[in-house]
Length: 101
Image (cartoon, rainbow, N blue to C red; front, side):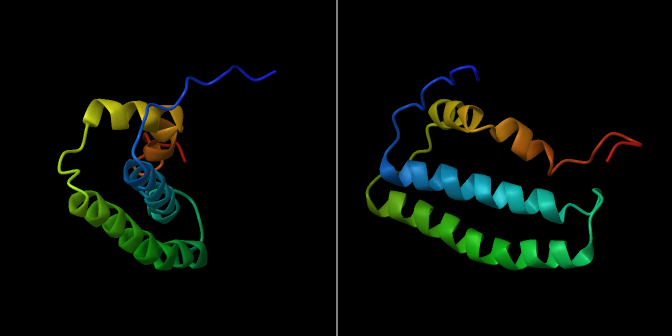
């Protein structure tokens, strides 16, 4: 039986979209990372999808701004990212240690 995850913090719908689109962009960047093993076609497909995901991320931030949500609440958003496995997902964007793929 899997351990129960902590609940997501309370987020506005726009904050939820921001987190979702951000993590999707991070996943794509991890697939494109030239320091990791992979083929160029998979990287190309991820790069093409990243353009669309960046636009969705921009739109989520623009919606927040229009709604008067002018501040990113870093502690709350960081908690949400941790619950959604953001640390592991973001690690794929970084350079791996020498000799590790």
